[in-house]
Image 1 (cartoon, rainbow, N blue to C red):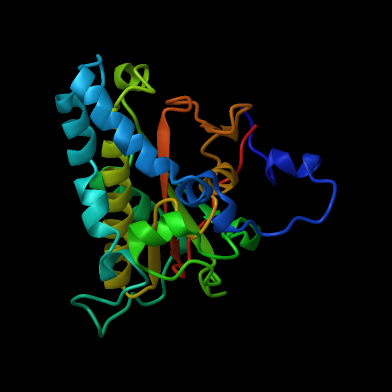
Image 2 (image 1 turned 90 degrees about the vertical axis):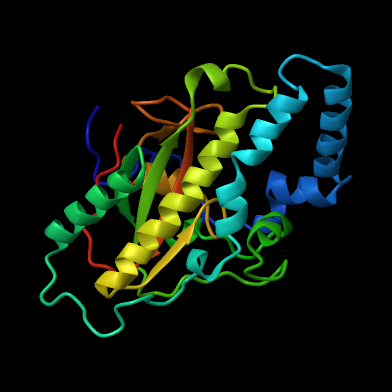
Length: 258
């Protein structure tokens, strides 16, 4: 492995790139085209009746229950740009970016992130508009609303959340490690954003919404994009979920890797 001055994917860009519209993701299109997610639910009920291995009522219960934190947190003010909860007066004087970066990474790992790094915000990776799927999970906007991250949010903190090896091997059965990872994403991003605000800076936590997580993780040096379209990490392969926090806190970005 070696450090790079800029991500390896730059050599594959041959023309001008445009921001991607969240309305065109598989999740948003699947929600609107044929109501595929309702079909998944109907099939799950059928599988429970047939007592198919890996899709029983107990399996389904774990899948639903383990995402509770994600369902609850992402629709609250804490999961948006938010405001300071207690400290509304003080801010660190003469902040040291190197020290702040170390403090934020330590906090992220203590909260529960398995890996954490920092990248400069690349506007290209911010969605151009809200898609229906993320709207349903957050209630933060309406479908088609434009997305803009303010220019003073210059850094994005990327966190990696491992999914259990043995459970992921059971996919596409009902697989609770995935939904547990979504709850970890919501918990870690929201909690880290609150921590940053209490220091006196601004923060926007998010999971899959607002921007494309994989290239941000690549920019932060957490791995490379695989042929399967997923982030490949040295530590966990592709068995990961990604959360992120946009912030105006002065931090030192990490290097992309090859």
